[in-house]
Length: 341
Image 1 (cartoon, rainbow, N blue to C red):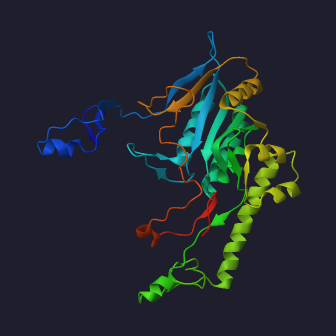
Image 2 (cartoon, rainbow, N blue to C red):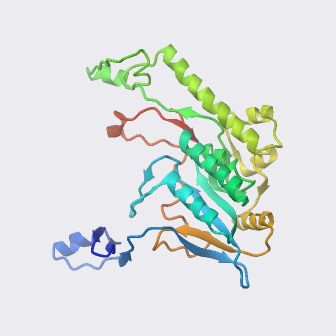
Image 3 (cartoon, rainbow, N blue to C red):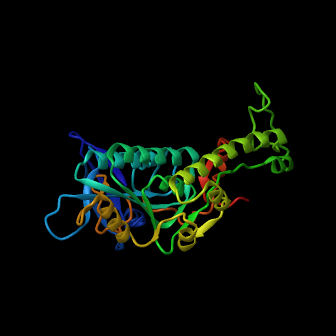
């Protein structure tokens, strides 16, 4: 991919579909690429654009905004393979702001496909959704696709109603903090480290030594605080459940859509079309144009098209560790469905 800028803020982006073509042509070998070439103008203004993805028959002005919440929820940019990447939280808030500013938008459907993410990112989106509802009065319907677990379920509790695809997975109500102990491996390699700190807890969670009991107690206290907030969020968002009922459900396990409905964690089992119909009912309208918000050049052929940066990762219940980066990584508190090892 080559991306160059010229006067006027217009760039030319060349996407090469056949990765081995350059090698073939460079060596003078006559070969036919199986991919394709695409040359497009990239506007300097990347303000979100409205794209119609579905509509009811007739002349209609009312709109339902379909907003995607996908992938791991983090307070950072998540670059795509052939894109500059989006700041996950910022992108969602930007779409909410656009829906809030458009008087024609009568309701919002959140299409969620995420295993959750960090505590703060999940909480930030949750609070932004609450603010959106309070300021605009527009109803919000959450729709669970493949996965809407942990932090993704957390933010869905800000919606007026939750609809789950029959095959979706949800739950995983709880907090996790992953840390690594490399001291045994380092000892075998004859490597040792020393930390000079200003206090006894300054290097707590270091991967270069075993955790002390008093350090574990500090981290457990933080986990308990974040867990209690999660339980409170679910309790507030699911008024039919008592706090005691939520606590019984909030042991970290996942639930199928039907199990979640039986336990009161979701309201209905249905499809995306059902969620849109419910949004229209709550908005008091019979027909609507369904719109999504995309960057310029984003193409959305149908209502079921993937969001620009892809959906949730395939291995949503795994944590991939990048060893070169591990030495500088800090412990992270997560509302995320993962596997502890």
